[in-house]
Image 1 (cartoon, helix red, strand yellow):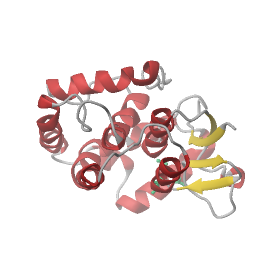
Image 2: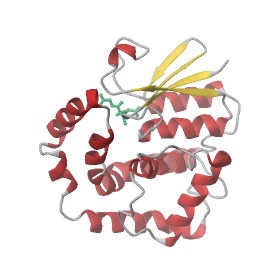
Image 3: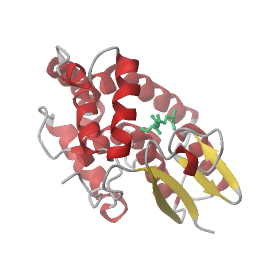
Image 4: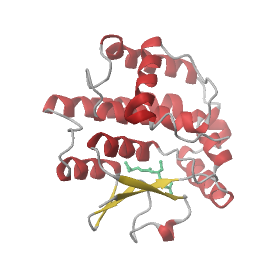
Length: 228
Ligand SMILES: N[C@@H](CCC(=O)N[C@@H](CS)C(=O)NCC(=O)O)C(=O)O
């Protein structure tokens, strides 16, 4: 049976930006699971496939409805025999390390420049909701968030750290991509879908890894529609 992934969409319903949805798309591709994606917008909560479900991704598969990217990953790993997303407890420990580094270093460096762009590309019905919820979360306007001081320095530091393993290894998973690659790369997909502008300098090892990630699965991510 084909799994269904509810995927966050912007004004153009073919433009899919959510980093959490990207992690799940990569995991489905990695496991070789047949899936389709169904677009949903922020404020279409009544169409989310479960009463109390308020965030995407949501996966429906084999009569199950699963929300939260980490739960979906755990489900896929258990349910499907395709290549493992993590092969050892060492891989699981690395996944935790990269997740913590994303939360403390990568998101705070790259994310602030993207929220205004999400707002600009969001569906008219979503714009007010997106601005209100995010401005409440940050305690400032989206425009002020975009102008946060020190973003270039934070990005340079975060990407230098990311380059350290990638100078020696093709992927964060070593010779082959694993869940750490998909988690970290999801942030770069969030950015890529929203803008093709070069927002900061990228170390060569990171740039080459981005190209390799875009090529995976017959260029699935490279083919993703971007905001016009
Ligand atoms: N912890 C959740 C986070 C998911 C999440 O925050 N998704 C955002 C899109 S990137 C969302 O659906 N937001 C809905 C909203 O703001 O109403 C996960 O890992 O799945």
